[in-house]
Image (cartoon, rainbow, N blue to C red; front, side, top):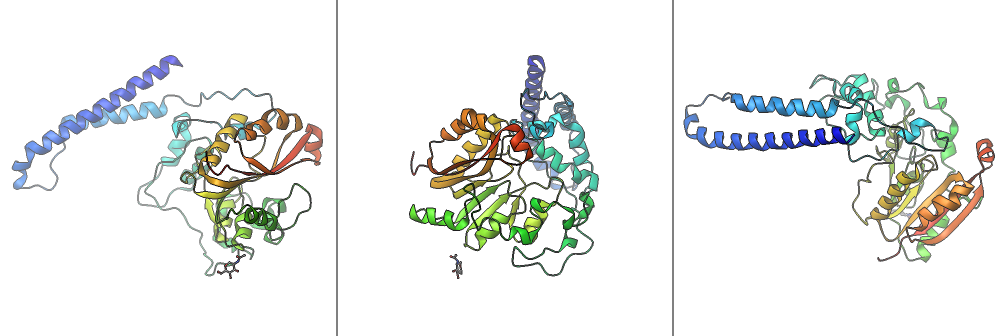
Length: 374
Ligand SMILES: *[C@@H]1O[C@H](CO)[C@@H](O)[C@H](O)[C@H]1NC(C)=O
């Protein structure tokens, strides 16, 4: 490990050095050749030494990106989380994970410039992002669009969306009815969400807005983390609140449907820094995607990034976070407590489905207010 890191550092240094050298050469060549190019040929030949340096830089980059095929160690953990979920939440310095997945990266970048992007190439984008390779390099090809495009889109986010505006080739299902109605694609069912309180774990929007009003804290801008097809954003639209939803299209067209509903889907994995500036949001909601499957360390980074983007006096809504009861007491409760937020609501309830009973799991719903100043 130490050796390869040293090697990489050396290569990096070499790369920087050659870059500086090329720049130096380029600038001197430009100065010296300027007076002679008045009898111009349009493309002066590229000097040999520059070509050689370019090749060195290319070789170095290739080496860096190809050096370690998948040698990533799987995190040691005692929980029984599905391995792919753990894989998707590993912390890595920005985009450094790209080089752990040279084959996927190669697949993603395998296209002909200025023509249609191959399906296989685009299919590699989400697996790369989920594995921490983000931001992705840009490409110069055309993303395919559906053969038929619906002429009219609904203005109401609960009206049926035109399914022929989704590129179904990317999915096993070929229509929205094919999905489990709990996933957020049954818009009739979605229409009732966030409006009424069926248990103490619910926080209906009317109650949320009341709490904010009483605290003299206006809610105008919010972020819904892991918000699926964007139903929270849709309901908040009725309150004239702008909500941006982070969502992936993992196995189902969550992003596409959110967009067809006229809501903003941010294609962003949980381990990614939130793409908004410090202190600009009034509310952040953590939905179903944020739960005990995420390693505690990754969750901690997520919470501190949420703190960064919330303004003083803004709210964090942890919506039905589930974990084992003992972990909530020992790990997650203290983790959330470290933020130093005011507990406006803190309700713990038993998770009564089959796996909840088996694993002694509970739900936590919490509404927390960030201190006005620090
Ligand atoms: C939202 O804005 C519209 C238009 O300005 C207004 O008529 C409506 O009352 C507002 N709704 C809420 C809940 O504030």
